[in-house]
Amino acid sequence: MLTIALVDRIGSGLWASVSVLYFTYVSGLSVTQVGTLVATAGAIGIAGAPLGGRIADRFPLTRVLLAVQLLRALASLALLTTNHYALLLAFSAVGSLGDRAASVLTRLYATRVAGADRVRYQAVHRTIANVGWALGGLAAAAALALGTTTAYQWLLAGDALSFLASALLTLRCGEPPSASRIVATSKTPAPATKPASTNPLRDRCFVGLVGWVWVV
Image (cartoon, rainbow, N blue to C red):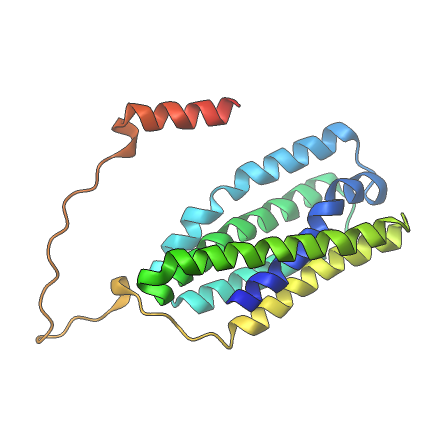
């Protein structure tokens, strides 16, 4: 999974460095259109995290992550097929959903596999992810020196290929144990009843903090 994180973030670094330039110079969008596209896709993508977590509770985690990686690859490749604003917005939103879902799924994998060492695992994962972003950014900077439409398109294609490679690597990962998907038998003691979770919306400090972050 750490190798997947490296490959994934290299591709993300390629695209993040040139996405605005791609939409401006290749797709021919205005500054206002690009800003609206990025903001809207990002807002829609927020739903990817809880959606990915819910699906992973019902289906094998590695299979869900595999599907998400393929979805991200298709969304990136689809951007190469059109310059129509509505389609670019739709494909970007799908890609953003996949990005958020993949992020929470990799963290969930770490929690299930590493157990008590999950904090250390996540720290290593974050370090490797940052290295991937840096490598992708350096590669994008070299391509930006060319400043051609073809260079921008190849960077987007590289992003899609990184997701395909991540999907292939995911096939080699074992399925981590999941407490929510363990079948109980007659010999298995019933789990202790958990206390009802506190509604975060009743926490004034939490609501105030979220509101402040949203405004900022």
